[in-house]
View 1 (tube, one colour):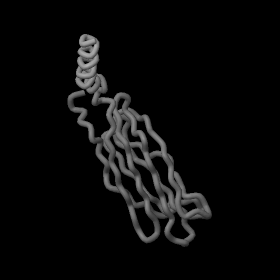
View 2 (cartoon, rainbow, N blue to C red; view 1 turned 180 degrees about the horizontal axis):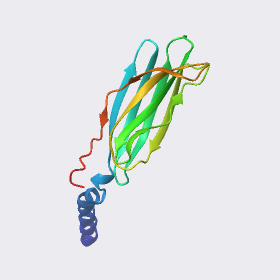
View 3 (cartoon, rainbow, N blue to C red; view 1 turned 90 degrees about the vertical axis):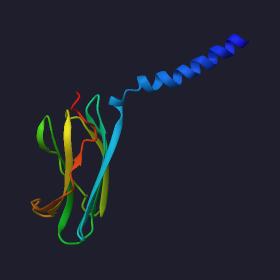
Length: 146
């Protein structure tokens, strides 16, 4: 009986050492967050950065239209990395709503940094009238040793 409990205790002790080694820090995620806010609109993105594989996951997006001014509000992600400077699809607050939110992910290789733009878009024309950029969210992982 003593041998059995010794083996269980040894296995538990090994698990506390081995499991963190197996769960590689390369698979870990770290997050960044930015907001843009004016009297007319509000935008927010929270990005989870992952490596192995490189991806932004999850990306939580919120946009609000705060003014009845003939414009709709759109929000789009912009990334810089090994795939170059990429402007991603514009998401708009649906007509008749004051806010919208999305949850998504992005696989685009190594991304150095990201930011987003909140834009006023003519409701009838679809033409972007103006955009305001968020602060830059830098990749929290150091790739200099990769």
